[in-house]
Image 1 (cartoon, rainbow, N blue to C red):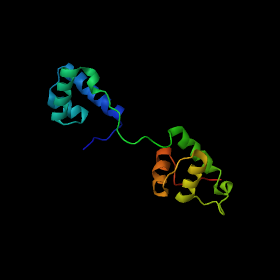
Image 2: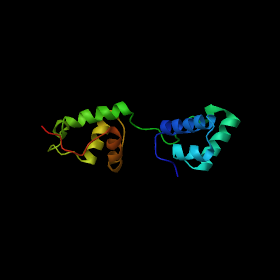
Image 3: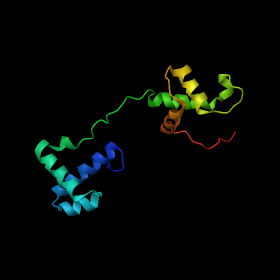
Image 4: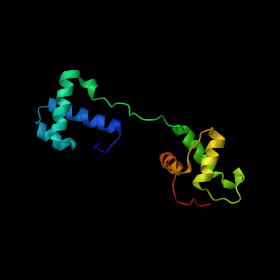
Length: 132
């Protein structure tokens, strides 16, 4: 199972472990300090010995590229703050289906309404009703 943390944070943890090993600490002590298993620290040590410190760098995450980039998600949030009435909907209620229609109109990208929620969470959307 993948440990919790961003790829950069996990890279820093691996580098810290190697730095502690270089200071003479035991594998067991390093594992305790960085919150990793003994075998993981041993594997990192062997990787550095074979391939050098650059081998501990974070690797790109495979997967399908995002349809909307982060700056477009932020732009979407601004558009949503204008209200649903701005886009010709009969009331000011945003639904996932309506947001999907706005994304298609503004960015030319098709999102299934069921997946719009993930996009909103990534963009930092809050479920709290803003005070007016």
